Image: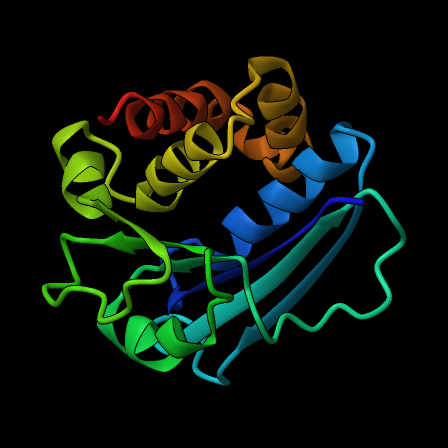
Length: 178
């Protein structure tokens, strides 16, 4: 049985919930069992936002992610709050454009991704979340374009359908990072 727990965290407006929802839909496209549990402060944009995603071969008993296998920290308060909760042997993806400090633990694999800078440099300042998502999926050996496209088709509204290719491009930028 394979189960992976993800925790995405950052400021409201960074696409934390979108990234989590995308990953949950990708799990569905891959015929996995999933849960997606968003959490955000009352101020939403600019406040804190997080979401837990569980992808499993078996039914998910609880949507609560207390010990993530993968932490995605898009700001320093998120890294400060959740670094200690990552399971030993897990992975931490930090947006190094916004987080200057290094991870203190040596029992996890750490990826410093300048996601905000890369998104800005490529004319897509709102897609740092998807740059990170591309890197995550590449590191997990799960970067299959068919399921990416299908999942994006589910989470991008018809009104914003023109953003599908832009999101795919942002993910490719992250996947191409060394």
